[in-house]
Amino acid sequence: MDIIDAIILGIIQGLTEFLPVSSSGHLELGKAILGDNSVPEESLLFTVVLHFATALSTMVVFRKDILDILKGLLKFQWNEDLQFVSKIVVSMIPAAVIGYTYESQFAELFGGNIKLVGFMLIITALLLYLADKAKDTDKKVSFQNAFIIGISQAIAMLPGISRSGATISTSVLLGNDKTKAARFSFLMVVPLIFGKIAKDVLSGDISMESHNITTLSVGFVAAFVAGLFACTWMIALVKKSKLSYFAVYCAIVGVIAIIFSVLNS
Image 1 (tube, helix red, strand yellow):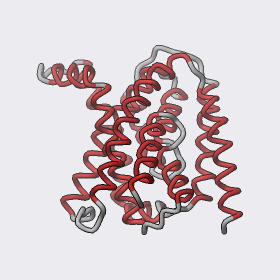
Image 2 (image 1 turned 135 degrees about the horizontal axis):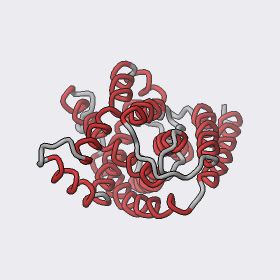
Image 3 (image 1 turned 45 degrees about the vertical axis):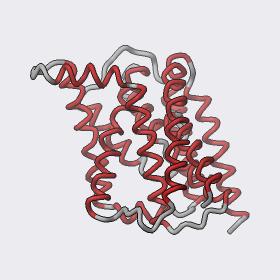
Image 4 (image 1 turned 120 degrees about the vertical axis):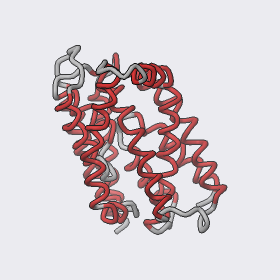
């Protein structure tokens, strides 16, 4: 993978991480189109680096929210901030358990399985379509909701299932406010990504020695900058737009991916 490809893939990750169109699915499609021949382990490393970049961009965009939450936690009371953090911890449980148990199986899926990506994008489209039919409410995410949303996040480990699309759709279908659902969706993944990277680094599963640091770095920067833009845009967009637009897009890209896979098999 050269620097130009890394920049392109970084921009794809940054833009699609916050839009409900599956960043992992688009990364796999981008790698296939650009002719990336990385083995699954190398491909997964690059994907993890880009996800780390967008996690940092999330923290920058939500820096005020995060700061307010930290201030609330320091009061050592069962207030709204501590409850919100507790809900995020609850939401992490399914992904942490499933990710740890089936880590190697998931890693093998990040090796250009375009047909799988296509079918998963169509499932994402269906989720978004169903969520679009839900009524607007002002309900907050409950602890039970947080666990169910966490299950959706675990399923979204599959390339082609949009993490934000699955979690926001699940939250909305449970009757929660769309804006609150988006905020919870964006913040809930941050500690999970940092935890995953810390685990891989400490266990030695991820090593920078055998990889092109320059390529990883430019991909990281591209994803971070694009993520800042996309996250800010999506927050404004989710308040006034319909998820059906993204459902149509995912369905079209999913069908194209399946056709591409069949023609190149």
